[in-house]
Length: 428
Image (cartoon, rainbow, N blue to C red):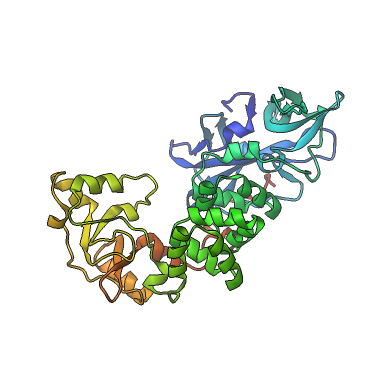
């Protein structure tokens, strides 16, 4: 194996995994170690990698030819795609050890686990060192970071008590919200709620939108109500409405009352629509501009980083006011048309309205048929007075066409098996 003899596992998190042909097959999310009855350190038996479609699989350490902080390379192109399941005698290093409070023997000093090193010894990899930040008891300085031999650290086994979140958060920081939501599903409920509560409001809002409904409800319930209302304010109104719709009406009212009125009002409106209709799945905050806005202004708006690709794909043109429900709907300008027009031209001269808008009561099958017929990524929704009240985007449609539990990995059907290699722990 062409690799350093010692590798710190937190530095592997997010590292790309390649097959022998150089094609990326996933990213490292954790390491699996087998606990031993003797006093020997745990043996590292493999890595957990996240594949496309957010499936986590086991990669046996014996199938890896190169491993470092830049890349992990496999010696075989065939993989077992069954979802990883941890065995009772196994340990997920990052998930279970980071932020653990431990003691250093024989000094008796307290500290927190920051990282764990695995080392190649003879014909196996073992957990040999622990990076521990000492607890000084002082608020004005951080404790020293020390690398301690595994057998000198007490508190690495058993149930962790009063763990912090800083180091695991650092490992998760670069993950996309969808991947992060997937990682949270692997954690015990209490630990998941601790980590979720440690995110800032915007990050937590993005992650909540990617979690299964039952996890969304449990995470939100673990927050105090003021914090829960702040997080709901950071969510897109349609996502906030979907989450609130899963709560009992009295709890909905409490949280809506705690939200800022201008954030709560569009959510209240969305909650009034019948499920399975355009009104219930639309976003009430598409990109809206008046007809006298310029192409340059429109391009500047759709470049805003917080917009999803589906929302940023077009500008809806209406009379004032520019917030939903708007003045009279005039039409739509797709971003490709904007790229072809002179920047100083007015939107009123390039707007098109050759496709009939949706109504709030339009059922989901009809929305799907029309979007597929015209190859659209979004459609306007207008009321009886021809005011724009929102837009249905293709991601909204997909969310509601897929099974209700599609985000829940436990509910997904197993993937095809590529080899006889076990996916849930060591070979054998």
